[in-house]
Length: 438
Image (cartoon, rainbow, N blue to C red; front, top):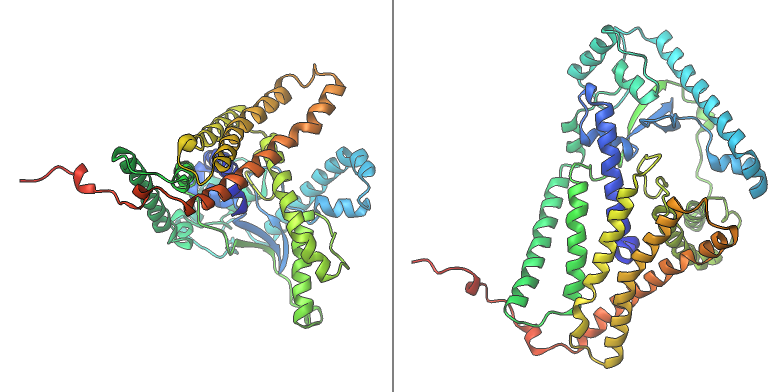
């Protein structure tokens, strides 16, 4: 929510990248009858692999095969020594891939021993006979052995959820999106009608129109995306007997539970067990600071060709430059919308001047960031090291200044409501736009 208010361009970039990724996934699995809803469901982490009740990982459409070992666990082994991590990163990555392949092969061998192709037992939550039969027919026709576990389970009939079943999981999504689009369209029509009748338009309405226009693009790209994956589909490759001795007992009161919750939040934001042993009061002080830094760092990562992050999952290994060019252009246009109230009535001249400065800044900042991105892609190899260091030391400043100006514009929008023009209280006479009948 905070990112959507301070940097809505990130949301539309995320929507574009997920749509592009979903198109690739849908094309990859179209032979199994999958569509865009299935593809979005995969990207959102809709399929999880379990060994009994033990979570093994998510089933993806690429070579990121599940394996119960993460990058941050590797960092813990290295004691978070940055030099040690960087020195062994490539070696560790190769070892990780080999172990992941071995783990994947272990699962396949177990399933082949446990079930014949005619006796495959569906272990996911949803079941559909037609799609299961189609998967078996594909196998009988000599379909090549799948490279990834997701396709393996799909081909063997372990995953059979249909598009209607996915939509049924978020049956209110279509209604919600339709209502939001109707409200957005109504708002834009209201502002356009006020301008046609020469009625005063407030700064709040102008900013809201900017958000509304971005919402149109976001809803278009996410129209087939499920609302959320609250309960992923579990694919269990091996059942285990429940060991009563492993059941956890309640080991604390309310305060301990609260502190554990804040610890997990900070661990998630910091990407390391930073909050272990830290007093609750100190965690409460650190939380907003780390949240602010997290927004800035993730924004820098996403806009600097960071195609995949946990916060903005797209499952893309490489993003076409056209997407960033488009988003930088959209961001500049969104900032230019804030220049519309250039000569509007403000309570004081100082507020008007501050608005003008911030409006120009939010319109120009995306252009600067776009130039930095172009330099990074085209001129990196021919740039001297001292200039690279200088650019990187100042690259985050436009983003920080942009966020500051966005906050300032929002505050000025609210303070301007204390002194409105009399015509701002008048409503649109819609009858003047509708031809009389008879």
